[in-house]
Length: 278
Ligand SMILES: [Mg+2]
Image (cartoon, rainbow, N blue to C red):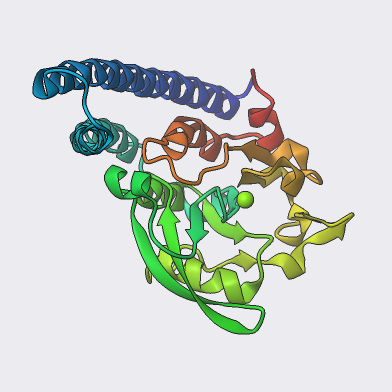
């Protein structure tokens, strides 16, 4: 083994060790949150019984459940933010990856980064503090006002991922629908300039399949994060699956991906080799 190869192996081992440590910390925090949520539920039951002094009517129960959910959601949120700050601070020590050597990370849009809907924001999102914003898109040649809900931790995810990878968005949605949403996510930072839409997909049996060769001819240095495995059927060795997101304010799938992405972004080997590691 050459000195350069040995250095790469040592760097990878150190990063892998760091990633596992970070992942364990995230898991511990998650367990703490779950335990806190359970004990919060018990307190609610005791409190409700004491207040009512007997059977409560439906309106009382609803009001108490709302109040408890609200305080519980903010307690859990504070806990998560504290943990997130620790993880992000740790990752910042890794520093950015130099532009010439970066892997390309392709991001699906709907149910991976955002959930869009028309009408009032669901109660669960409001209580959980999910960031929502009104955006105007064009659907079937008509302007439509939609709400865009950001998956929890998306802002921090994009900030870190944009320092480690060259980012691109690949959606099965039309350009007139996707561009206003991606512009909103990019927020003028210029990190989501490279975009691919339905017109770049292959349509097979009604499914819109994403072929990463449209994005890059070098499949050894490209990966896609997608909630729809069918979307990445053509390049299974480059796909990082993520569960679909719609409403859950406690979702942390993007946060959980960061340690693995930290390793991937610095891998001196192919994407397929890293993703196939057990
Ligand atoms: Mg999707």
